[in-house]
Amino acid sequence: MKNFYSEIDEITLTFGDIYLNQSGMEYIKIYFERPNDNGFDFLESNLPALEVKKFSGFSSEEIKNLIEYAKINAFLIWDIARENLEKRRLKSFNYNKKGAHRTCAPCRARNAGCVSSATLLSLPGVSFF
Image (cartoon, rainbow, N blue to C red; front, side, top):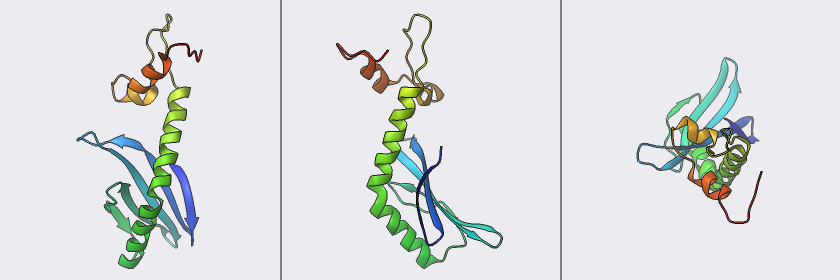
């Protein structure tokens, strides 16, 4: 899912969901786009590394400024991505008829159990359903 973050000087910053890399570290893909006569200039990077993955149409000075902008706003992007992830997890519980199997959609996609939702649903004295 792409999330809108900001638009400055016709450059739009959007970001994706939180993913895990092969080492188990979290990352978020970020995208800068600017319309041009032939479509869009773009830059793709990620948080927290801020490595430039792909780009077209931006000068080296613009890339430097965009990466700096992402660095300054990284904590807000992480907060928004985590908040969106939790909202989706709460909306996407999957239950069998007995209610014994509770796994969120992102965890089903990874073929993994959902520790956070299992913990959330098993708190003593707390009932969500």
